[in-house]
Amino acid sequence: MVYLNEKAPDFKLLDTDLKLRSLSEFVARGRYVVLVFFPGAFTPVCTKELCSFRDRMSVLNKLDAEVVAISTDSPFTLRVFKELNKLNFTLLSDYNREVIELYDVVLPQLGNLPLKKLAKRAVIIVDPENIVRYRWVSEDPGIEPNYDEIEDILRKLREGLVS
Image (cartoon, rainbow, N blue to C red; front, side, top):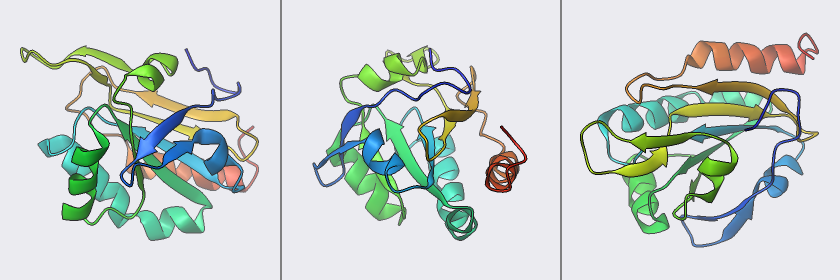
């Protein structure tokens, strides 16, 4: 389990260009990393969620935040999903389901479908010192995160109002 105010565990996953990327790489940039876990590319709620992050990127960039989205889809599927939706942030494939286990965001099964061990819908904010500052995990894959709350937390973190 990843707890608030504790160090975020590092990981290495493939991006949509088949390049191995790590959390430490993103943290080293000195920005807040917004880890967005989502159940599956091309599903209605996931598409809406990631397009919402896409549409808020100018605000998130001003808040020194970088979005990194993670699902258990293959990097090939994620590449097409990213291109079709013009997503302007990194998507990573947790195809082996190691990071969703590490971060305790495993969705055991999606409804009545025979899809097992997907990512729960979750948002985790990691600060430039690699400390978890925000954790939201939904037990219902149909519920989107509160985007305004995420921006508000980032604003407060930048202003030193949250420790």
